[in-house]
Image 1: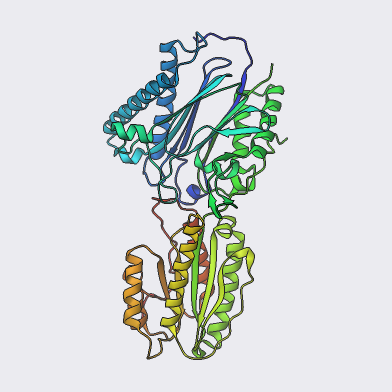
Image 2 (image 1 turned 45 degrees about the horizontal axis):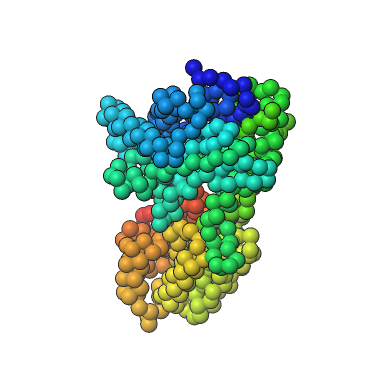
Length: 286
Length: 222
């Protein structure tokens, strides 16, 4: 068991909701998410988004998200990072995170062989973080978005999603990226320090509702993706999370309310065609 | 009780251009133009009610009789009222389609220059006749086939009662032969078109798209 420091605690909401387009085409929800609370202050969160074109990507994203969460927990235990309340260096984190990705890809290969699935049918992106009150460590392959906040009214992007030249083109854990150059290029890790007060991880189905991703640049006279978390989205919702905590809602109740919000809490979410996943964590002030 | 009141950012939607190239020559008078106008209005309403399509679809309309007229430059549904078409003149079909191709390329270029992602544009030709004698049908046919093969745009041709099947089929690409309209079922056709656009604008790269069947409005036997 991890040691509990009795410091401030996190309230976390997590849910995956099927998109209208998938309902229309009779497809399952291809997003998956996993959240693991390691103690009051440390946790692991994972979002995986199955490729629309892959026949069994719902199974792939479920397998990958569960295995990534499990492996990251093992890495933290093995290195004693959490017990000592100290952090790895950026380089140590990258080394460990890449090892985790490689292990999970190997397991996915074995799983696909055992089930006689084509590996490409299990294609999914993935985005994982280890969060604490004083830092967030990230690793991701492909697209999705992530944000964090260290002070009220200020939110920053945690990752830069990988985008190809064409609309909605990205890279998956099943892609041919496992050369040294591919790993450098496509497995991205990050390390943010500070007094973390909140974080969010989301699949691309949630990005139009919560990030500025396609806006007009007056200076350059063209549209661009600033990858900017929308403060007016996150701050009011942060207050909602604290209210849920204040009312002593159970984790199931929180997730149920969060599911409803992702389903139709805004016009954008209501009409979104893609599956929507968001994990939203808020540190409850002492 | 609602706990979450976060606002939605104002993101620009990726665009899907659909250019309607419509025959308004004299032969379209009477029931044909009346039903075409009715179908256009219903198309407008169907898109308006589909929030995703309404934010992503840009409609352009070019008509042809003796003159080629750009009735509507590419516009989102909220930014125009569907015009009522009137008929006159002969059938400068080839010139009109060429104009549509040129304007489609210009719009794509503008999307690129302004950093806007876009879906493959669609050109829809609707005619009840055959091109005037001086029109270069063979040249147009080659150009459309090449453009469709190189994924520059999707082309659908709709034949209205009295159309020349051989010539219109020659113009259409091999992958999408001419579709003969049953009677004047423009309403059903435009319902199909709005449904299809709804599916296209909800798709992602790599999705295999299955459009609705055409049996409700197409006359498949002669």
